[in-house]
Amino acid sequence: MSFLSNPRRGGRHDAEPEIPATTRTQATDLPKEAPSTLLYISRLKPESSLTVWGNEIIHVLRPLKLDALVNIDLPRPHPGDHNYDRWKFWTLVVASWLFNQIEAALQLKVKAHSNDLTYADEIFSTIRLLSLHNHSKFVASALKRWEEMNRDHFATPADFILAYQNQFNSLKTEGHDPSCDYALRRLLQELHGEVLKVPFIEEEVKNLGRPMDYQLFVYYCKVLVNECRKPSVSLAEYNAMGVDGGATSQSQSSGRDISYRGWRRSTKGHGPAWE
Image (cartoon, rainbow, N blue to C red; front, side, top):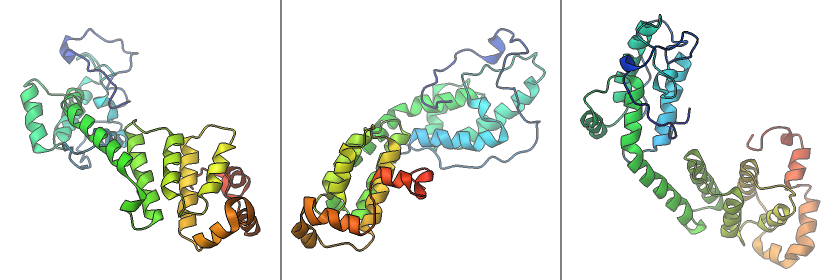
């Protein structure tokens, strides 16, 4: 279920037409009524990510088979459904728990929005609706932070690469990540003249023969971090050798193949690039 894309379903459960027994509802596969303590997560605040909060809600509910209760794409059971009482028990439990996963100011907004909010799906949907404006500001701020990141703000190139990648991942979580091709190109530009493998990676990328994707972006970030953390030739020595001359020989003589194709042929290349 996509937390930010589901439209709100109107109407109350007791006003809906009877649902055939074969139709999947929010009551399907619910556990038996029993005392249960749901894990608490970080409360949703104006400066929080609505996407991350919503995903954490699902991650708490799913192992208990309660995530269907907040899925507004699934119909509620009719009062005549043999699982209706079980659904009624759990939706009230989850609704109360949801209300406690948001900050006090948002709780007041939810109460003011409607006096007729009782069940988990409608409370979940209302929280999302009332948080969309703050979420838009959160995403805009996250994108601005990523766009303004540069090498000068960090003590080491490795610190910069990791922070840059983490911020990119945050945007990816929100579904607002820039293209991986642009992200890598910008990263390499910031590291030019400091990390010796940059020109080799630039040349590698030009001849990949495939689009730049997230796996490749993560792989090259890892290559750059590893390069920053181990001894290498000095920049003066590198300039003295020349990019097209001794530098290539140095890379080859060291026995290290930085290419993605070389990595795929290696033992480590048998798994995902981030392993």
